[in-house]
Length: 167
Image (tube, rainbow, N blue to C red; front, side, top):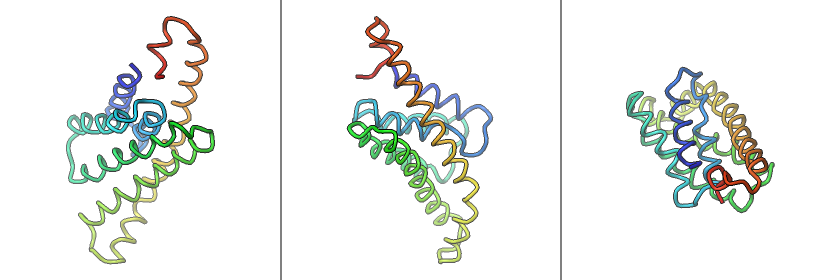
């Protein structure tokens, strides 16, 4: 059930107006890796991206963006057995950096001269997008983890626990 909620929330967030790169999809990848089945977790953010890109429109960077989300989903499964406040924070920052590096290498390869100056220009121009990515990822990651832990406490041993809690 949680996987479906994450997919719907991610789609909704990508399809409504928002600041550039200020969406919870990366936080969903980190959360899914930490709490959901190891085999399914990486595919949730990828599914959100593919479905929303089909609505928004495909672009020549999809292999890089989709690949970055898949990699983040895979790497985030490490949190399953290392879930601490510090590790969650580090994972949210690290995933933003991974996304920034992978997608901007793609932009550099596609749109900039293939030299040091082109690489530097590409990464410098991407800094404002990275700021939004980093801030939104840290905020949304802690919102997701916090809400989930709160729901876990509130669900206790009620009949709703199997619906709300991934165990």
